[in-house]
Amino acid sequence: MTNTDKTRSPKDATVTEVVLPGIVEPEGLEVRTRPVPVPGPGEVLLEMEATGVSFAEQQMRRGKYYDQPPYPFVPGYDVVGTVVETGPGVDGGLVGGRFAALLKTGGWADRLPVTAADLIPVPDGIDPAEAETLVVNGVTAWQMLHRTARVRAGQTVLVHGANGGVGSTLVQLALLAGVRVIGTASPRHHEALRALGVVPVDYRAPGLADRLRAAAPQGVDAVFDHVGGAGIVDSFRLLAPGGALVSYGTAATRDTPGSARLPVLLLFGRLALWNLLPNRRRATFYNLWAGRRSVEAFRARTRTDLIQVLELLADGSLTAPVAARIPLDRAAEALRLAESGTVSGKVVLTPVP
Image (cartoon, rainbow, N blue to C red; front, top):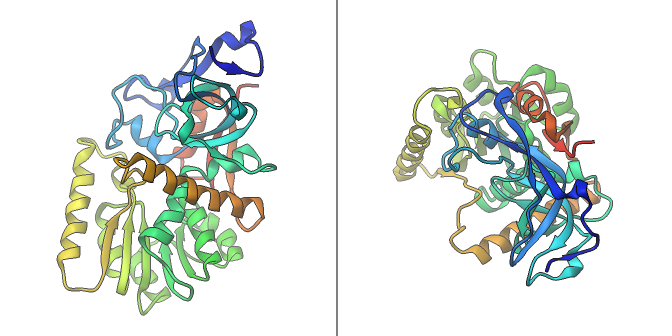
């Protein structure tokens, strides 16, 4: 028997989910229904309030995400929702509580089983869509800034894609830490970045490396680069002595045909080579799931970091830009919008009205 605060009605007997059937255009996503799952031992049934469209899903639909599961599967890297049932061995007192969870896949469903140990409480009064934008993005930004690059007040950093999901959070966390921020973005986002205190640079205009060097003649203390490709060389060259390059993606090769692994392996090789040079600079690839082999340590680290980020959101120190709120059954529209590069913040999927 499961613990629940309500008896399932006929409407509750099925779950709506979005399935990625293979390498398809966004319109190839399939909206399906199936019997609602019963939470197993150590699990809860979470009623989704918000789930995100991240860069991972953009890669997965192209078959380009490094360790994605075989098709078909339900995408959805993270989720915020309310516990409606608990499985055997789980405290029934969790029912009715709002939690966030990192999943990697499975979040694009209106109800889904989640391992209870992976739940992270969301403070009262926070909009679920805003909280959702800070699950994977917030943990990623916090850890890259404070655990990987270890920035300090008075330093200067460069954030590529400063208007994006991770980038916009990185910018704010860096500014809160007393760090000067240079951010690349298209001109339409420059006014908003200046209002925050960021030095914006147009990444599309010619001579990007020279213009970035002009903004930081002595170099920068850290670069956060999700682009990869040939431009990663300029990111490394912009570092001041003692600086850190934190690479966390290969967006430049998102649409390049061929192996999903090759661009990543080439990037790993380049970063490793730079670390062998006597240049007093560090080059790291950030992987959110690193250390997952020690599950308890991974969970503790993720919980600690996300709680800090959500507390900043709750007290108004941090904002969570939601680019759009789109119902789950319009996931194709949401994915297309997220891939357009025209929005600031994160596209969020919400329950079907």
